[in-house]
Each structure stands twice: as C-alpha cells, then as structure tokens.
Image (cartoon, rainbow, N blue to C red; front, side, top):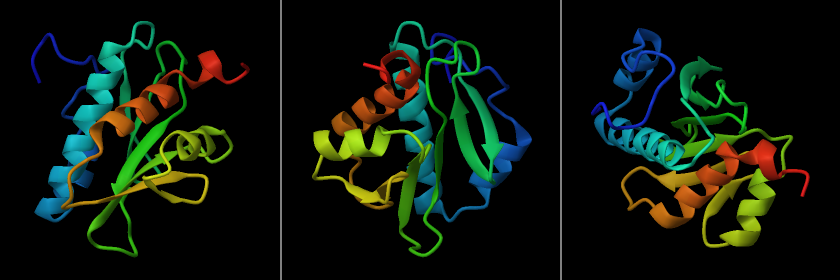
Length: 144
C-alpha cells in the first residue's frame, strides 16, 4: 500500500489478520482482499473518519474507526455454509442493513447483519462503497 493510501492504525502486516487471509482458498482470498481495499479506500476518502484499525473479531478481519469513533465495525469473511460466497458484516443492532435494503434492494442480504457476495462475480462497487461509507459514519447520522 502506498504512503498516500489509506491509513491503518495497526500495522498492515498484522500477523493474525494476515494468517486469516492466507488460510482462504485463492478466489475467496482475492475477493476478501478486494473488499479490504474497498473499505480502506472508502475510509480514506471520507473526511473525519480517521485512521482505521484492522483487527480480528470473532476470527474475522474487522475494520474499526477507533480513532474518531465515527462509525460501526465492519467485518469481512467467507460464508461458511457456501464456499463461493463472502460477506460484509455489520453490527446487527444497528439499522444499517435495513437502510441498505431500502437503498439497494438488488443486493443479497443475510438477515440484519450482512451483504452477501459471490466470490467469483463482479463486486457491486458503487452500492458497496456507499454502504461502507454509511457504516463508517454511522454514529454521525444514526440519530437523524
């Protein structure tokens, strides 16, 4: 990642996060790394989000706005019951996924906690960037 790129609060090469990514089959790993980049790039583009902390939560790569506390945690992982699916998880006690359903009914969801994506299909980048931006700024707009 270039110096001008997204800021991570923790070292990008955190061995525990890297080990989780390395354990996935290549197609899943590539998709999760693309989602990681999308999350970090989106965070970098939003004023006031600050550096992102990358950590493991529940064994999943997680992205937190620890510096500013502007948003809700985002997690990414393979869907265990479907080998070719990955998910972007959001806190289930927020209205984030409900909001995403209203904005993007064409996306696939898992209850009130995740957007599901085929590991081999094209990422719905515009919609997903918007959803990630809403999660990263959740505490700014949730009461409105």
